[in-house]
Amino acid sequence: MIKSKRNFPNLRYFYGLIEWKLPTLNRRKLATSKAQTIEDLALLAKKRVPKVVYDFVEGSALDEIGYSRSQLALRSVEFNSRTLRDVSTVDSSEMFFGKKVDLPIIFAPTGYTRLMQHVGEPAVAAVAERNNLIYCLSTMGTTSPAELAAAVPDARRWFQLYVMQNRTDSLAVIKQARESGFEALILTVDTPVSGLRLRDLRNGLTIPPRIRLSTVFAIARKPMWWINLFTTKKLEFAAFRGWDKSLVELAATIFSPALSFDDVKWLQKEWKGPIIVKGIQSVEDAKLLAKMGVQGIVLSNHGNRQLDRGPVPIEILPDVVKAVGKKLDIYIDGSVMSGQDAYAAIALGAKAVLVGRAYLYGLMADGERGVEKAVELLRRDFINTMALTGNRNLKEVRETGAVLRKTS
Ligand SMILES: Cc1cc2nc3c(=O)[nH]c(=O)nc-3n(C[C@H](O)[C@H](O)[C@H](O)COP(=O)(O)O)c2cc1C
Image 1 (tube, rainbow, N blue to C red):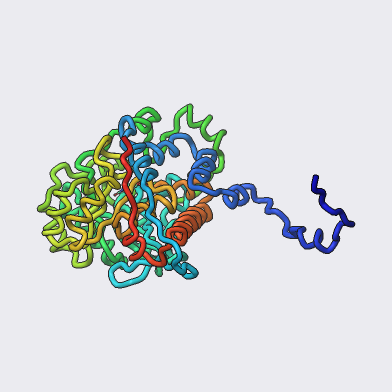
Image 2 (cartoon, rainbow, N blue to C red):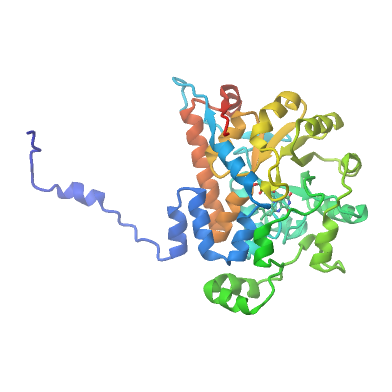
């Protein structure tokens, strides 16, 4: 039997191993720093916010079948891989309308963001600014375009638009985006009517939250969230501040069931900058929009919050790329929970992915620091996968490609 030769302990070696830094006493900060996946952040988020808020973010429409299908489909993508290529320098940047962004990952528009955490949109956009990423503000944002521009003047800001039932109302919103220096419009078209989110209906979600007997228990369970709610400015659709309408009335006018291709044409006249149409779920619609000359489309089912059991975005991506990839930019979203998920979409030909829940989990878990952590994790896995597949830039990622494996 082979034995190890023993000696006196080497004190200098032992001393060198000691970590002198004191651990932080901030438990929240510590927990965030230990997260290794977006799912870890989601677990922390669940502990920090009331159930009704967590469910609003995590939930999707009806039986939530489409969401798990999207997740499974993304995870089933197999990466082609090259070796013996020098990957000492890996460049994950991409150009958007003539300017460079550090990762092909965009902060998707999410309504009511201050419900998740009291700072909300500015906290997320500050992370975008620091990391040279793009932030997209929702029409249903709880921070106005002007407030956001003032908070993060150097962030690349896009604005998500719902063409409302009354075009004059839409024009008033577009004007705010233009005057506050928003660079591009994302027109969301998958909301002719509101999706049926059963978790929200069961939880009796209202914005702002109603105070009921059950609220008292909810406050006892998550006191910090409630203290922040009561001690910061009120929750409202900030782009409509001063309008003589209740939140319920506003929500009802924001979605137009009459939305059609004519509205896209109308918008092209009203907005001279880039227009990206979000919520496309077929090759046919992608072709029509390419013909109309929009700058991009987002293959999206609204994170499965609208139509359940619709087409899975990543599964239609290769056909859409083949049909219109040379004519417009193709973005994609839904269930992107890691840098590897993002990589899968880029390798199959997307220009960039949008992420929604991934950053909202970080925001709920630990505010701006949690969003920063989400970006750190997405970036870490994306760059690591680029190096391990032998790709030095996104052009090579798309050339090397990936295989969409059947999930059923
Ligand atoms: C809480 C929440 C609110 C959202 N609000 C909007 C919105 O106001 N406008 C919009 O176009 N999309 C909205 N979305 C959809 C996102 O822009 C995006 O399509 C979706 O979140 C992508 O899926 P993922 O969350 O799995 O990343 C929302 C999504 C979530 C989770």
